[in-house]
Image (cartoon, rainbow, N blue to C red):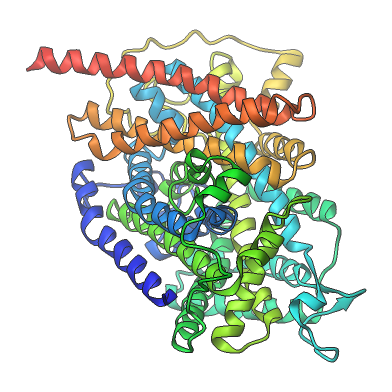
Length: 632
């Protein structure tokens, strides 16, 4: 069987989903192109910045993709490429793309607010607090997993013999038999980051056309890689973790266009070029006869029994491992944190949300195809799931791509592996950028909720704006009153002075909240590698997707619209993720106490908050049903 047929079938399924299913969801949501978006209405120049759709798409896609559509399929293909592909395609169209579009649209319609504020409006303040705690815990897990993966990718070294490097080659530097791959990506990261403010100035302040900015971005990417090849940067993983932490601490508070948006726009061109190169490589391999799936020694169509014996029963484990390629709750945080504050019209929510997820699913399909063409089952297990010690999913992906490019295009394995590493690097750091900023938003929402009765915080809200105004989570910007009618008396403002006033005033500074976000990330990342964090991150991430879909269902119920498009996916992901979290407690974290304390506590917090949120969701649905009966 040729891998070309797999790619064609997958591409057709995803395109049909975007062509026919996305408009159905748009009709259910009530999309209107003429309605003014929060980015246009508020336009504060820091967080709310109306931006052309291709630029927003680049930022959103670079943020949501992360390592998920790469690392997830790499880890889960042990169950067989058939089950992995089936989950990616069906999950991507009917769960992931719907989730992303609904989350983006709702956040935009509700004043550019995140998921917690929407929950407060439609479910209640207690659900808001529980969801806020849950999101901070999930974001800490996301950041920890991706920080560790970033350090692994940016400092990676591979045996020169594995890459089949000739003695006189000049592509990679070799030290003590180890080829330095990560150092090239490290230098590329630094150069792209340094050029980001210029790019933001040109497309936002000088209004350069998108095509010209794209051309300049490609030039920056190419130059950064060439410099990296000439002067690769070699540092220890811990050093990189601290360097990246320092960078995201700063970027989380400065205007969004200065680093976050502009860096994503530059970096996404590496990702676009990499996806095109993967497709060309796989097509070339198929045409040259090397794209035939190995029948005897290759990764099998169905390997469910062995995967279940090594990694855990296929359901729910595989459905949690492959998160971002199929459905990911983290996407709702990106949608409600940064993306919804940049959309300049409502139709952009569909193009960015739905199609961004479809492109991510197609990337996951390409990853699977590279693995089944480039690696035998024994090589795959040796890289990713060895019997002794922890495997290296980053190396597995790099070798799969390197060998596939060697088969399809005849280029050296080392060059293909380097390209894979640059691609992975691009996803990782851009996701960390966004995730830390989102954590800062959540923490700010929490302080405003918990300490809003004190004059320090009230000076931002009640004292400057009418009681119906709500914080956007980014500096106390008031927006229009929510569609849900509320009758809340103005709170009694409590004056503060001395130490209490000093402490509360400190919580208003972005660098304090960014520092808390970075600290939470480091606590988990420095005590647990991504192999340990990934299962609970994936479980919590999928659970968040279910909760986001439940919030969307509540919104649809309130507006008297069909709910099956969000309700059925929500129930499936809810059962899957809760089952996985309970399994982790019983099988993994409980027996390893106290060494597993950070992960066990995270697991318990996620389960406890979920139980509370579900109870309030059900109460809200019963109340809506009574109102519907009374008004009938």
